[in-house]
Length: 86
Image 1 (spheres, rainbow, N blue to C red):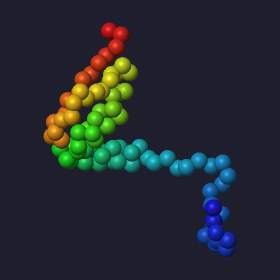
Image 2: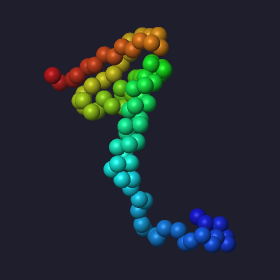
Image 3: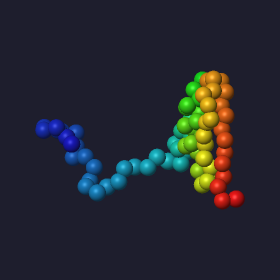
């Protein structure tokens, strides 16, 4: 919402949608994220690594469950993948 006395414009038309980024902008952003993740992966904690695995687990199977059985040092990660209904 604009403040009283605004002289810069009336804003976006009612009902208009946000502009979507271009495909090149999205690809560039994803490349930057992947490069950063690859470069700095060893700096992540075990919890952060598990969060990443949980975030992307649906890309591989709907029935994958990620669990940890005990606490591991920050430089080690163990994942049990359990697939149901096989």
